[in-house]
Amino acid sequence: QVQLQESGPGLVKPSQTLSLTCTVSGGSISSGNYYWIWIRQPAGKGLEWIGHIYTSGSTNYNPSLKSRVTISADTSKNQFSLRLSSVTAADTGAYFCARGVIVPGVRVRYYYYHYMDVWGKGTTVTVS
Amino acid sequence: DIVMTQSPLSLPVTPGEPATISCRSSQSLLQSKGYNFLDWYLQKPGQSPQLLIYLGSNRASGVPDRFSGSGSGTDFTLKISRVEAEDVGVYYCMQSLQIPLTFGGGTKVEIK
Figure 1 (cartoon, one colour):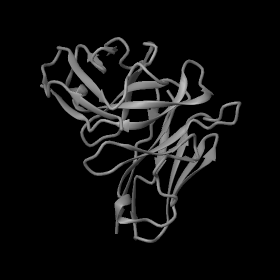
Figure 2: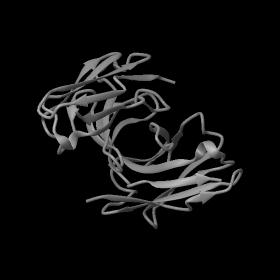
Figure 3: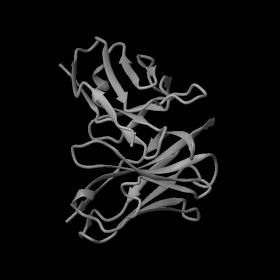
Figure 4: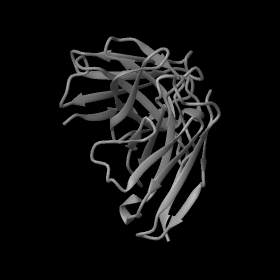
């Protein structure tokens, strides 16, 4: 059974870079047709999609964050990571990693349709 | 960006009674092959979200059959045929037709 676990600093200073890692257990991030996804949630608010990385290594990002965000994967450690630069208080909140399962044969314009079936418990980041 | 609008914001329900949540998108989520790129997630208190419905009407593995999704184009509905106490939480619809993937603001379901 695949499990995801976020880790990283809970406190980041303004203007610095937020770095989080998602460790995947029970399955390999380099096998199968999956996306590996980051989503965040400001305290008491809704969900915001940050971006994803495909098994092949290709990425897509939320345009509102694109200039500041990088998602990468380390297959040797079975982890994928999020880096968000130049953070402000608006970046405070819970950060979730998730696995996206591709539905065979269902393609959207620039990527494969996928649903998020496994989520990490989330980690809270405060920018202050 | 595609804007997702959910209603109501809050939904008090009586156990055993049905519940309905609506989700509207700012543009059609129907693709030419007949797929609606609309998913439903439930975030129970203190937990991460969990998948309920994908591609508009497909129940995810392990999801009780009291949950059903319907709709097409821009208007979608999540129905709970008989609400149970464990169904409380915030329900989100999400579109995956276009990047960025976007969520509705959420509907909080609570027991009366």
